[in-house]
Image (cartoon, rainbow, N blue to C red):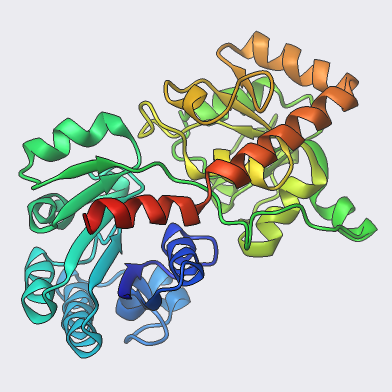
Length: 344
């Protein structure tokens, strides 16, 4: 089947993971990177230049308009049977309708972030919800709200891992020096009052490395020595987890019940996952056997200290988590589920 996947192009993005999974399942997949098309090297501005430049709104809107026009042309030329949009915050609602008219395809969206959170959403996203044949969402908490905004059909589809990029990497001594630590955290600061900052401050006395460019803006004497100051993607992302004894996951407030992608990716890399408690977690991993959970800072510190002292137990949990992630939580399986629901 011919499928058009519309998503962001960065290595490790959910859109790219979907593209690989659908290709592995035997489908003919065309990928359209809407952000790159609007602002990247195929558009009027290079990404670096765009980030540094403050443009009048009307000029930025012209780039987005050109991208939407080009997307309709791409859809018309390849005539896919299915269109999968990941996020799609730059897509006009009219673009969704015009693609449908031009191709007759089933058009679905998978929101792997909240459709209603300001940093990852906008009016186009919300008014576009009713234009899709199906809206998939990563967290079941959002299902009723999306329906209230006029969506025809909403389905809960958890995120997952991609074995092509999330796997234990054989490390050199230099790799271990660069990426290794007792505890690592990979992710954004979000805000200076983020729960992530509070949790990381509480374990700053551990051998800790914090990965993510946004942390450089934080003036925090306690955390500053722990901040690497850059983001990691692709193979380097998996190297961090492969080199670390434990990986901490603190969910963004947009995760109400469900797990974020990082939870599955950490496990797939063979690193022991230490995560805050989420309602949906026991459906995916068995706490204490496949992952380690915490609710309070004191509990987190106790568990980190225990598993640093008990390497055998730590490795057993890491192996069990990896087996479960690769057996039940890959994007191949998520795409099978999506296709079954979309084409039923």
